[in-house]
Length: 138
Image 1: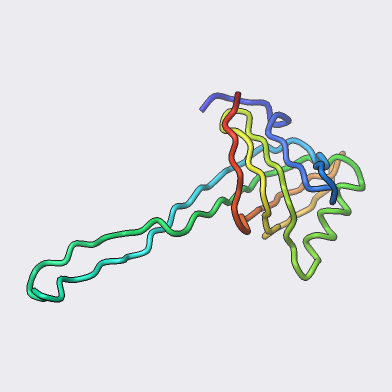
Image 2: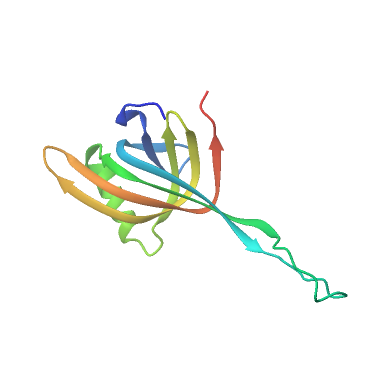
């Protein structure tokens, strides 16, 4: 995978309307796409002594995104904290990875760690919560 600038890996959260609010560039990031299979093997009822070969059905896809983020401004920081403390810590996110593409959909803010030095930084983990739209890079 080609090297990219951290600020080019952007994370945004829905503004509640039709747009997304930019939080900042991510570094130390990872995108995990899981495809879970369900065993749907059915033995031969007429010949139960015959070997049954496993058959699988693709039934579950998840996307997890994690990384470190430079939080841009107090509004973004407060929004992340409010979301992490909510009874339902999920919202619509847009995540742009310059070499992989864009992932848009509902994610749960599973983990949030905030720290401060000269600026606020955060480590966060997002887990998909429903269908995610993927657009390949142009």
